Image (cartoon, rainbow, N blue to C red; front, side, top):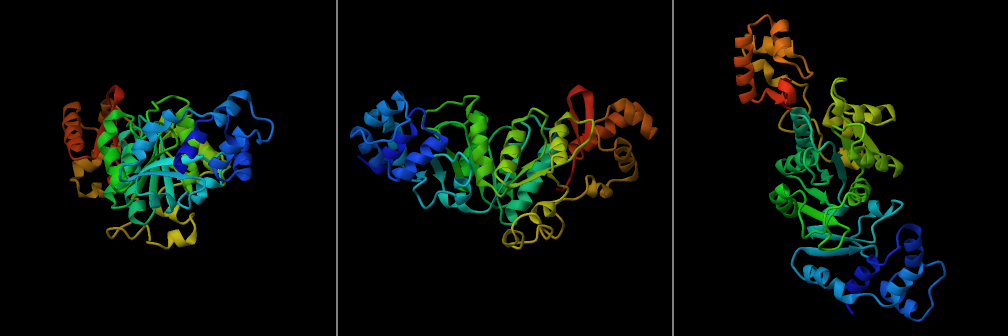
Length: 374
């Protein structure tokens, strides 16, 4: 029997996780030895009947899809006994027994920053995640996220745009892409980094998988950045897991009127570092990373500019309108009141500003300014 098959069979053993699994692996570093000991009745006590039954007689046929997938180029099985297993991930309290990886597994041992946030962000949140990921990836950090809609997807795309590497950690088997609309993005991640999962082939998306997926995102990374998150966001789980693992936690502040800023504000109150520029992140990471390439020396400017920094190229009337908007979501009526312009003129100017990428529409007929450089 192939050695990989024993690791795969061990992964499927019911009731084996955490300290129990760690204790067994300490006694039997090679799973083959563990299965042989089980058949010979030489295992330590404390294992339940279902676990023992599996270890004595696993269903080898159930492993065939995984083994077939592993026979393809670019597909890898990285176990805790493999030198390619990420050292940072091994340090967490409940490291995955193994990882399925598609792409270049060496990326998993590179310096990584997790960027996470809402699945339903504001346009400004998407822009912020994209630009920060773009500049940080160009500075030498691998950007790690969960391939979800919203901030995750923007972070992966930003890393790709920056010519860097990115890691996608998913809560399904690697033969599935969830959400399906990110199929093309998943292919790009594989070509410019790696996709990883701890779940066997054929595993569908289930709610309980994603919190466990989050521990891997945090565990792979030197730090976790939350861009936008409501108070009950899963991104906060990732950030708090990072803090428990002794990793850095960063958060982007926002308007007090934006419900997606409240999770970030809560993290900042709990000790997360407030981030306004990419340099704020780089200076907190190990010196060898921060020195790789100055984050403020990308394309001749600092990667994070104040919102509206490029608005100076607009004529006086459009700048007046943007100044009247401020930085919170705002209705047309309030813009009219503040600017002194007519409703007809304001509506026309907002349309032009939206087409130029300076403002974006939100639900409820509101408008918001869009950062033009982050």
